[in-house]
Image 1: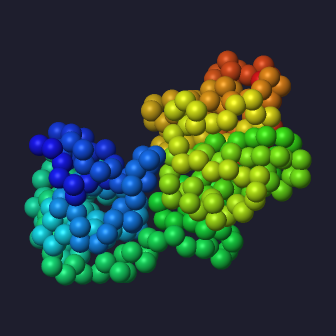
Image 2: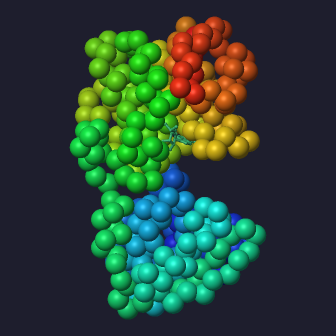
Image 3: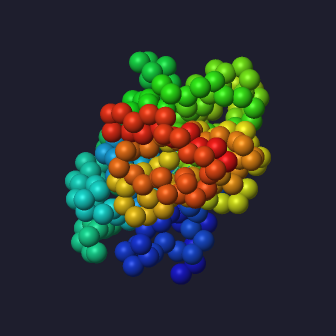
Length: 305
Ligand SMILES: C[S@@+](CC[C@H](N)C(=O)[O-])C[C@H]1O[C@@H](n2cnc3c(N)ncnc32)[C@H](O)[C@@H]1O
């Protein structure tokens, strides 16, 4: 089947569970270059497949956006692993007034429905999941981005140990820009590239880091060209999720990307959960590796190329 002009997909559902037509427009904020589901004109999509996110508020926000974007009677397929929100999908969709057909396959729940003429409760779910300024942190954020409403304790430990940096640098996996704001407090920093794979995080960071030395990229830093080269420094709190094998490879990829982006003598400042194995990849990629802190279940390293 080939895609009509208004077929779309959110995320990358396993093809054996939901098979959006070839050419369906990608709408995930985690796939750089995608269109934004938020920006789709209401009532225009004929069919949409959604690999639903695990966080409840983010998921209900996404489902509400999906129902808003669909034409009346447009087809909606929503799926998620059972343990990551899948078991709640049918009830959540019913709460929006959808008649749902649910199947269980390969540890997922797959719900098929059509947009009701007048879905219930869209405005409340849209308001609950929208970007907002957090008064206690003085930062813009949004449910679904990393540690969206509190400073991550690993990030906090790095902030406590970070010296004033100088020259050109990057914040890899910048999130909403917490590390970047601290880095840019140093007057000798001349440029800082903020890179993240999450569009919503980059949009929040743009609002949080108003500084002419900052540049922003919605990019997967595993891709060539995503990070400037010959940098003086890199700061990062690499992604970890539950620390499974794939996540470890991603975090270690961050370390290698940092090494490749630094000039000889350039410095990486990294924070991580104490149990994550970064030592070997740091030793292999850097000339000198110095543990700078180890507290509260986190560790901070300074590594010189
Ligand atoms: C542990 S969070 C740190 C966020 C922020 N630096 C902080 O300290 O609060 C890791 C960040 O890396 C981003 N990320 C994950 N995979 C990525 C990739 N392949 N390329 C770029 N960013 C990625 C995530 O979206 C997330 O914002």
